[in-house]
Image 1 (tube, helix red, strand yellow):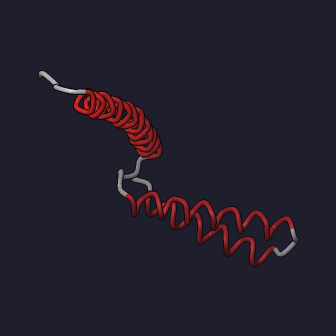
Image 2 (image 1 turned 45 degrees about the vertical axis):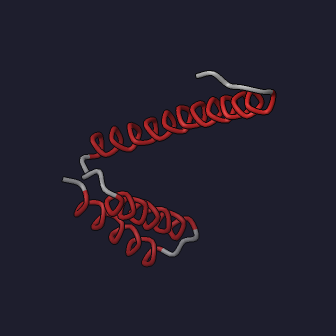
Image 3 (image 1 turned 60 degrees about the horizontal axis):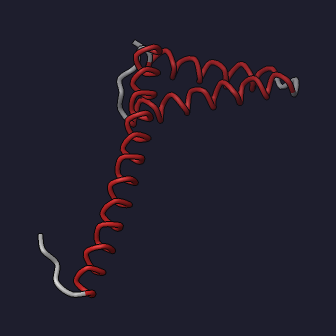
Length: 97
């Protein structure tokens, strides 16, 4: 492509730089997205759950319930701790195949 004049050359140069930056960021962010996707796929396969957003939300909720149960047991609230642990285990048991 033949560019005529100084401003034509300047526009072409700036456009090339912008295109290079966009391609660089696209490749970098695409690589991060692929890494995150592979991470969640591997974790879902290792745990034995489906790879969906709802499965990971329920997984986080189940882990949070287990955490609440352990915290309640450390505060010597045994009934509440056992209830939180049972709820967390029931949710995780339902989720995991």
